[in-house]
Length: 121
Image 1 (cartoon, rainbow, N blue to C red):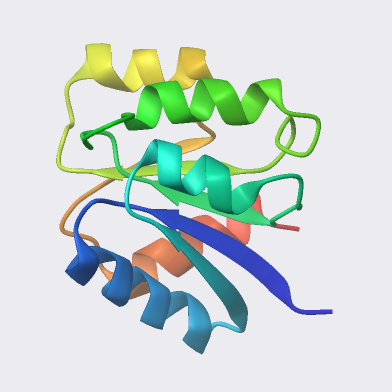
Image 2 (image 1 turned 90 degrees about the horizontal axis):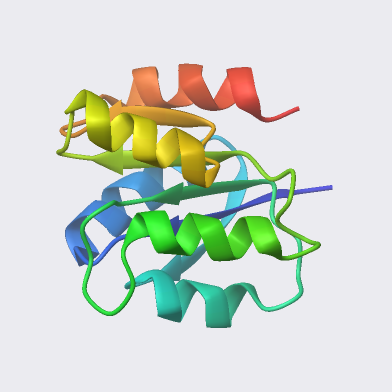
């Protein structure tokens, strides 16, 4: 069965790059342009992985993660933050919200896939 990932980023070029990397690794990909859009697209379906930016309009990555974690279908889904932010307080806020891991942009596709292999069964 094909694994599915949800990519959430307000940058279409980042969504394209991450999506390409994940498709090459055998994932089906859903995309959201911000947290609110992604929650709507996620609905009640289950995904195997979520990769989200932190700074986005409408709903940022931290609030998005909180809302995903409150849903029955998102309680245990691995969620990776992919962001330009690397301050310790932001990382702690992400972890408290339920982020599984933190990757700083720009990302290297090989490194992203290494991290994904560690968090997706």
